Image (cartoon, rainbow, N blue to C red; front, side, top):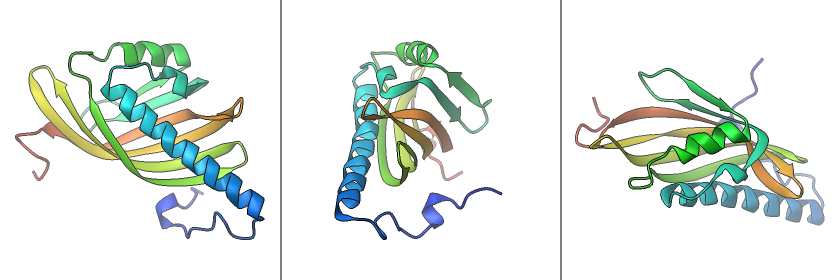
Length: 161
């Protein structure tokens, strides 16, 4: 049976926790949010992002009308991100974070709006990331980013059709 989606659950992260446990929860949530923000800012500035991932990380992208792509391992991710054109990097806007933390593991859901170029065409898309995070050497990293886009269209076309 599949777990209930994060967006359907009641917020219980601080229930029955000590003050110290609540403080740890707040710090972990903030670090995870900042991890996603660093990812977006680095992508937009053509800066390396692979070090934000665990060594065994997986990245999956699901774009409407295209085959699902899956990238496994830090070296594969390094190569994937290095292939992003520096003269027209994607501009991701990541927001609406939901996070569920269990010790040194966490899951998350966040929205993405993306502006990018494909060839000479300006594209627009939006969707969400299903993330798995892992604490490594005291810092949160992405263990998996699985992005699903609702639409991926030329900006002039829009997504209404």
